[in-house]
Image (tube, rainbow, N blue to C red; front, side, top):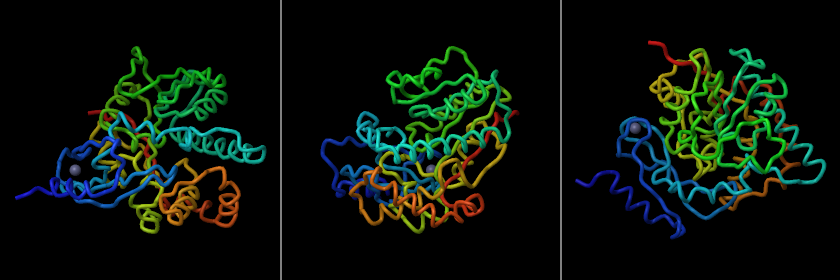
Amino acid sequence: MQSQSKESLDNFKQLDNPSDLKFEYVPCYQCGTDDFTPLLVGQDDLTGKTGNFRYVTCNNCQFVYLNPRVHSDNIKIFYDDDYIAHDRRSKGKLRDWGFKRGIAQHDKMKDKIVTRHKKIDSNSHILDVGCAIGTYLLHMHHKYGTKVSGVDFKDLSNYPEAAPINSYLGFFYDQDFKGQKFDVITMWHFLEHCYQPKKSLATARELLKDDGHLVIEVPRLDCLTYPLQGKRWPGVQAPQHLTIFDKKHFLNMVQDSGFEIVEYLPWGAFPPLFYLYFGFLFLFNKGRGIILENHFWGYAIFTALFWPLDMLHRWLNLSMQTVILKKKTT
Ligand SMILES: [Zn+2]
């Protein structure tokens, strides 16, 4: 009998993808099973790059992931300067102010989540995995005097304002931290991009002090907005998101990796209306991509109209989830 994987592989060949794009098959990140059912085909709605990217559900444990995934040698083209977390070019005075204010609010929310259960002061050391250009680390450094380190594929040496950050370039699990241990490790929208999430979690466990906290935010598949927007839901973000966690699989993976839960939040630091607005825009655009700077006013008006959703987002399960973890003691 032909396996489900073989059948899906043939189906996948029918999807129209650029011939120079390298794909690789991957077993389930959670249970290692190579048996799946296709779930949806996503496109790069953010930048409009060509490609059809298939997400599957594991037939053994129902984990949702990109399969085949874009080979790690090729994924860099999907993280060019149009990518939102790295995009800081000037957009005019008012827009610059708006973007800066948005980023500052986002960083303050991260601060509030981190300090819910952990006192941060000048003796603390924070490591941010997937730190982009490090605005959150700089916020923490300037506010608390804390030591800050960050890992990303973005080279921070071109950003003089990022000088207080000890920056590490490349894969998190390949870095040499020279025996340093951290009070707080944060992963804000990192884990769903990671090629080896369990290896990253194991690395974080090794690097965390015994009383340290690991804070992880990812999009939540079993939320209110995914059924409304389907394959255009921004939490899909093909092909950058390799995994899409619902609450159950998210908590299973972190607990299997030697952590216990301090607190689970059905929300995050990420602005809740952002996904809602851009998800509807992606539905309208049908994979043509967007130019973020053109949506400053649209998004501003949307947030002004739907502010009650913003006020209630902690209770509505709109799109995000965050978990605060400590090392499991056995
Ligand atoms: Zn599985």
